[in-house]
Image (cartoon, rainbow, N blue to C red):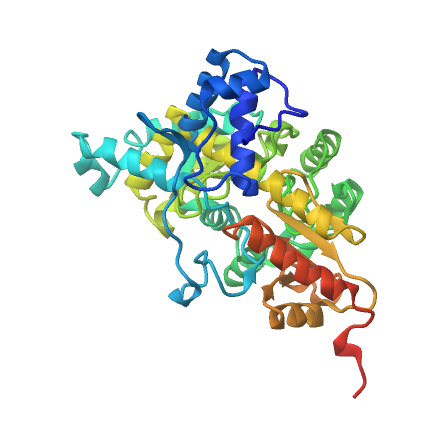
Length: 462
């Protein structure tokens, strides 16, 4: 009989049991259609009251993990069928084909179930026509209030009046750069940065300047020197779960960065798309320098990638320009998307879906630590990706080629490096996109085998 693992879990017992159910589903020890133990039997085995188990099953059902059938018991929910690899869609999750560690996307979870229930509710709404029309500032107030509530989970009190909706975080970055930079401006970034930022900067005519990082993230001393030497006015950075290195800046480091930004009147574009993955994290940089920081968040990384709604929280002096950039680039985010995101935030669905992503992240990071034991890996227990530093006999490009030949896709440091010749010999592995722990284990096992080889095939002399 399946029993929940409650070791290390604190808080109300029923919540710990519900969390353990989610972890077991994420790890594969509970599979779709598996029947859970009768409530009375589980209560006896755990030494808790029947009411505690009943509340746990109810909580797990609300989170989309379980479903009940009268007279038959409680089962793990079925989340639909997944396609094989012949779909032709490179972003699709498949049940066969190469193991893909290149896509930093949320896990396949319970979003489809939540969406079906939301659409059923909307079907009976008398406001359907409004989702097919242009929307004004007044129409968006409810959505900005929901966004403020969501951002407050990050430890930063936001006002709906200071929030601007976008088509996801990548669009928000482009909007911010459109609004506050001009061709020829210097944009300060980390030495390895979110790859689309490099493309956006190229198209906007911006000059990227890499600011040194250390083990704690962006270096305050290097930032101070860069501001003095370049007269740059804008910094783009990822303080939480930096991609690709996984580094999260401490509160003290964020305070130092904020002080330097204030000294130079530097505007910070803070990309916080991974902020919701960490259950315990420092406040955003915006909390230390709210008058200088454009905070970017999104539901696409923490809930579902196809839900293209992003949130910008910005100082009032920049809001007019930011709204103009949204209008210029897309006019407005799709009203139906905004409505779904707001409903999920208001009803608690967003919190449940986000918690599921943390469960998957924790499970798969544990897998990676076990399989890659003995190798140099930078990771976070609740992050989607890890940064694998290669042994000295491997070059990143030939390791990537060898991995792909063996059926595993990875990204090298060159993808993220501002200066190609400084890219470290390392690869980023994203663990969340694959549909099952079994495929993740398979891919990691293949990579571990390559790492164990004593020489880089690309260095062999024929």
